Length: 263
Image (cartoon, rainbow, N blue to C red; front, side):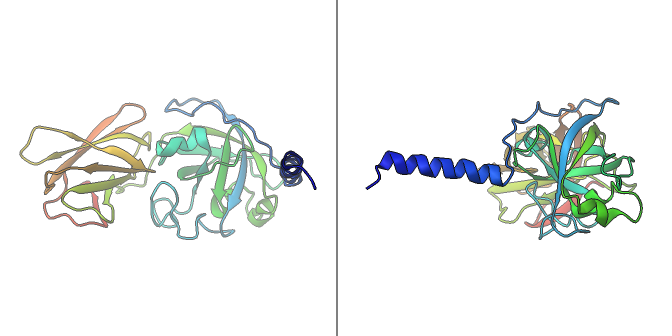
């Protein structure tokens, strides 16, 4: 009868074999990508997920909490970032130019994508798991599916400031489950840095700002014994330190699962 140590050794070796057979290369993540902008391109690996011409997740959402990323203003030009890009949700909403030159079906022209989801597959220091639509957008015209058939490729990327279409306003979605003692807000469509690192609210007629805590993705929340009635001014801070205030954007009598946009 085999000893327990022998069995454990066999299991461990089998696990190593499986990892090798599936090409799993555990590569440490690179340094965090911050709100610094330059002309320098960095190297990354790219894959794609979801439907070939889709926006990635089956529900068109993702780990940032955004919904309908297949529709404007994201239009499916979205993707997952690995640890130094997603940054436990603090990278949500950040924008990147990406391009590829190999294989031959790559156009070499840069396209812009927004981080809306998380990817922890350790295949490279920087890894973009793109929507099928975004991945195909790096191809020469008419060769989108040919490029997607490559499955994985090397690309170059750099962080850029987000520029939403004219008329797109910063939007605050009051999440499901919010009530007068619990308020959770998802922040989206932020020009410039795109990502948000702090959110505060102030009730109309009061001087005190109330700090919200990170919940998950791009969602910020507060639990309080005091009733939150509104209207509320929202102040958000981007990674680069820009502070913006949107006055009375969440009205009195606000409702859960509802979006409120800057006026």
